[in-house]
Amino acid sequence: MNDEKDKSVNYIFFLKTKKELSESFYFLAELFNILSINLLPITQEELTMLDRLKRHHLIVLQNDFSSAQLIRQAKKNFLFSSMITGKMIVHDLSSFSPSEDVERFQNKNVYRFYRLPLSLKDLAIAVANDYFKDKSIQAELWPGGRRAKLPTIGLNV
Image 1 (cartoon, rainbow, N blue to C red):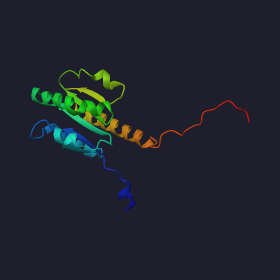
Image 2 (tube, rainbow, N blue to C red):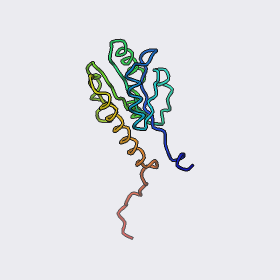
Image 3 (cartoon, rainbow, N blue to C red):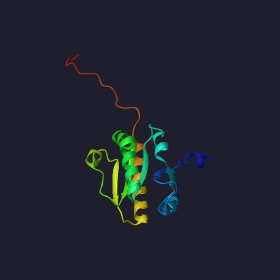
Image 4 (cartoon, rainbow, N blue to C red):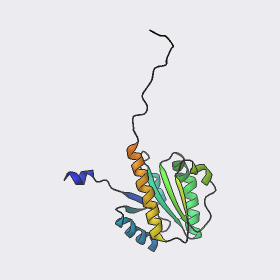
């Protein structure tokens, strides 16, 4: 029973750009399930209501003009601000050119661009690798900050 409590739920969000999910979502969900990660579809409105204290991973698929326009709007409304604060890591799968603001996010390591066409199996492995690497780094961080030090005055007592 303790083993069940120790297991954490691994999940990555997939931004829905249409009412119906694409076939690539279902294929990616199967691949991530093998890697013990749940792929959860999420709309733009639900994305704004996420817990901002946690760091989330989001897969964005831009394979047509309507999805590209919706994602561009989401970036302006919410994604840019959450990437700047480091609370959202975006895996951008696109057949278009990368975002104009890529340089701004390279230092924070929160934006990864994958040019389509790409094997979904290779993509799932790359995203899962980034996810587990990020999760292990978060587990190593000490939440308490640095220990305070008193200034040295230079008196020898």
